[in-house]
Length: 74
Image (cartoon, rainbow, N blue to C red):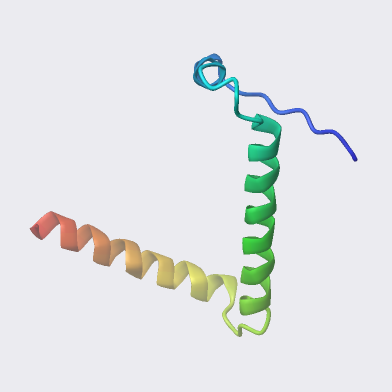
């Protein structure tokens, strides 16, 4: 099995050290596996999309403006 090295903050390492019974390598493997599966699913869902990058940017701006408007009036 290939190895991977991760850099984490001292603060995170300190928190992890409080739970010595946890196999943090397995936690990381599971998180990476779940993210990879999610990305594969997203690729399958959007592989037939006709949207261009410009379309996506346009819709993203509209969504951001709508959210901003909603929270400004709230």
